[in-house]
Length: 428
Image 1 (cartoon, helix red, strand yellow):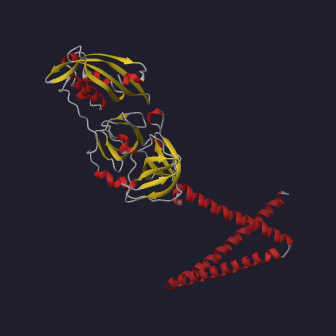
Image 2 (image 1 turned 45 degrees about the vertical axis):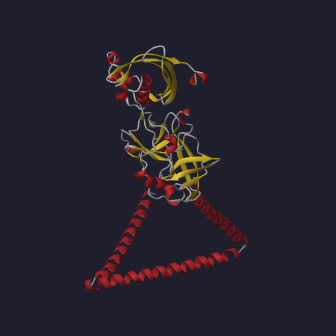
Image 3 (image 1 turned 120 degrees about the horizontal axis):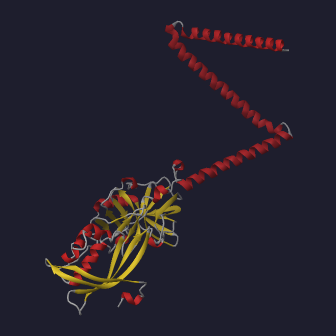
């Protein structure tokens, strides 16, 4: 049995070798005809290429015609063939309809087919680039347009000389300069620190696709809602532009919530389209990003509220200046309003560490105590940033001041915390 198998294997091997030798001989013969004589090689190469290309096209067309004829006559050869044809046609129609549905889905969900390939799974990419804007009178959102500039709406920082910018990692910064335009509702906060990795560049033009899915990012309800930024999805509706409007707006069906103003509107590829501005009844308007691109270089601080204090005017004015400096995080200026006697008990670093978590200070009253000279009755509250959450504290008491170098300075205090004051406390 083994001998028979070996003989069959040897015969098969011999046959394969013979076949390869024949193919090799034919191939070598063909190459010799093609290459020699050498001076005919270029002509042969062109001629053979055209010949085989035409032969391929001819055979391909003939094959297509045969397939077409077979397809036409196939259903009429028998009932079985007819039923098969009906089934196949149904499958083809279904697949074609599915392709149209998929194409329409890609158009409406992504705006452009190329955006389907964008990486949209990492929502943290967007959330870490959006910041909170916190002041005494309002709160909102913003985002970096350069390593040290945060863009937001003007109405978020209106009447607020010292808003704070809270980054996604929980740290907060005080702007060194504020620029804005109240008519266009745009403001830029310049920061003392740089965050190059968080920048969302302002484009000079945008691709607008109706029904495209877009994302609005911000902090709804401000610091009342703790946690990371919120992403709302919706559809683009239209670009609204009129001579009666200060800027052009992108309209969407996203229902913007208070606190999200100033945040970015982006497509699913992360391209900036607009700035969250206003929303009502399920319709929202976003300042078109190219408008901000044009306006930012022209912004000034003419319409920005300035800090105006005079600690030399009176003891009450000095106390107001002291807490205003704390509010503005102008710690060296505040430290400069401490009397020489007070400074014997502290230094700048120790004193500054007492207030590291204060976001804002609101002064309700600062009036002279008629029963004691150079003494001020004061009521104020602080907004503290503790474990990524705002905590409010309310205080009242007295500050004794002393006139040194022509300025009233803080000398002794009797300040106590008030637990859950009633409404009358604010107006007494």
